Length: 318
Image 1 (cartoon, rainbow, N blue to C red):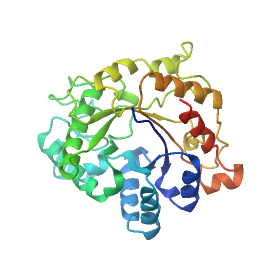
Image 2 (tube, one colour):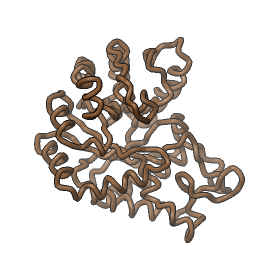
Image 3 (cartoon, one colour):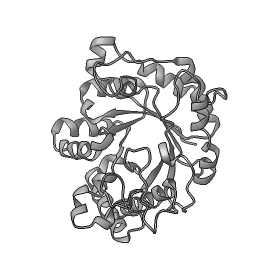
């Protein structure tokens, strides 16, 4: 099993500060994350435009040249299927619980035309990020649950609808990169395993967003954490352990800061981290990473260098 240790930063933190921190840390994988939320498609578009800047190209290719994995990790569905297409193709988008077609989140996964468009856009996006490697992390919209309730979709769970979308995205990625693999993000409403068969190359990415961080993820007396683990064994059984990845939040100071300034000091808990990593490795996860947003130069000026090396020590010890 090839283990990897990573961290994910906002694209707006790309620069010499994070390059130096990354090179000194012992990490081997860096995720670039245009901010999520309802404007994730706009953030992704801004990042793709920034790829024309020499300083952004240097950052990516300097690290790639030293053997590091650089990956785009973001909620991409609303970029892949732009919301303004609703005017011409309202049936491409989901039907809400009131029976209304809406372009708010995700899509109608029973619409063959929309899925074909999704494939084409995924291939195009892959061509814009040739440095990404073979593992892609292009997630559906950043929302707890937004299933399509139309006549053809209403019987499908949120996980099944997500699986259909991910299968189409992967088909598109393989048009550009025959070796492409794509993460199924188990997060919010897609924690329950799907029943739709995944395309070859779909792997599990487990993101326990609703967990508590003052308790170990496997603490049986913590109801929140137990709920996040409810389907973990079933997910691993369904997708397999090959390329499986944990996406955690131990280093995500954007979460702890409420996604706004002023930044708080990162509540780094070495004991919890150590126990969590040991648990995840015991389950057979190959890759472990954490968001590391809001830990840039501004954070360092206020609180000092963030504990990235200590984080890596915990990852590498198991």
